[in-house]
Amino acid sequence: MKLEDEIKTQKFYSQSHKAFLNILFTAGALRARVSAILKPHGISHEQYNVLRILRGQKQQPICMTEICSRMLDKNSNVTRIMEKLTQKNLAAKSKSQFDQREVVAEISNTGLELLAKIDIEFEQYQLNNISLSEKEAEQLNALLEKVRDFK
Image 1 (cartoon, rainbow, N blue to C red):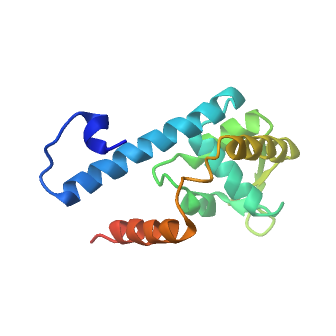
Image 2 (image 1 turned 90 degrees about the vertical axis):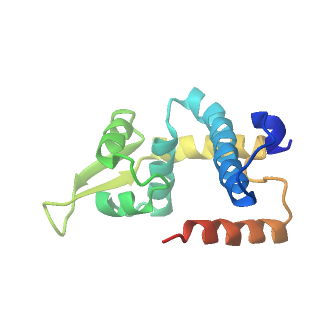
């Protein structure tokens, strides 16, 4: 559906303004779809993001600072998120064996099992496929990276 129909307006200052609003609107729609999958599992987008980062470590501990640098939402409170994941037995924290001042985290087997279930649900709802050809997805990625490269 066209943005004009979704937000019930025909007026935009420019095509760039429309594109900006379109990105925000689309991000919200995608976030709502992801929420529908995550909510029954009792985890937030940010917790899901941290679990995916931890899974990518292949059972190797990662420091909290590094997790923070990889987050999709840079304003996330990784310490608080890790506390919740630890309480849910989805991840574990410990002191680094190299620097006792540093806290590192790992995903638990329960966390891995949860991500496996969520991966299946993403496939069922085709959230990994946003109805674009590979070429279109490549073009979109390049354009979105260009949008983020503002100074």
